[in-house]
Image 1 (cartoon, one colour):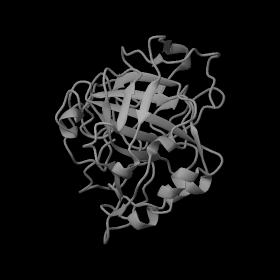
Image 2: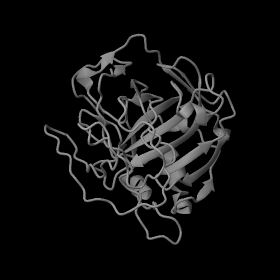
Image 3: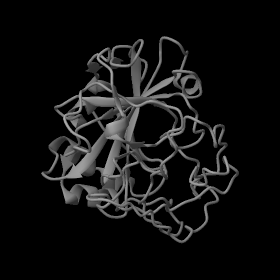
Image 4: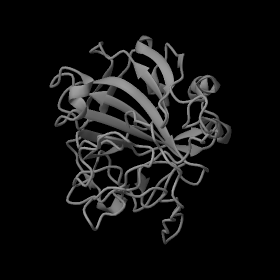
Length: 304
């Protein structure tokens, strides 16, 4: 999440493949490993080769993303439904950050955001973005029982009751709340197509196009069951300031829509072209955290 500073990048290292055992377990490349010291036993506490900015929490104990295990998640009957209310007119523009494409919102409006669920107060919407893979076999940052989805949406909100602005909230305790939504292959998603249609205008890094009005609640699944856990940003500064709210149910998107994501470039105008794929961080250890669920599981390892 957040913009990664992209100057001075080098070529990707050879891919290392994660092998998962058991049925329906996807494999995905652990395509980048740490170039800086982490806890020794957590060598996958990775730093992307495209990052050059400061990393404040590399090697922390509440890092994201994680593999969510159905059998280990704890049903919490105190978790209320998440309340979502976005102002479509606050949508400003879509841009290529050099790491993913991101849709920015005017966050001066207190009413546009989320509350309820695991949150103690209202959080304002700031932006949303996606992570995806080079193929439809992987791309999500979080996994469920070892299964990776082709892509993952992150809707990023900040705690306007506790902090003066988004920048302060980014590195502050309980500063951010991020809704994660998995994408799976299926029917074309009509609302997403509005974004796909403008992607040719942001093929290169640091290009942008106007978008709006756009209400991102149209990108949420009909079923609002979720998992929640305390974690971190998945790009620098990797601050452990995030309350993650991961939707249980994915949304369907067409293969052609995900293919359009892969037409974007990490590189800017005049630079050697580098396809924007595999822009996810490898899994991080759960450590002593608990993953809570707003729903009671009816079976182990069930997913759509």
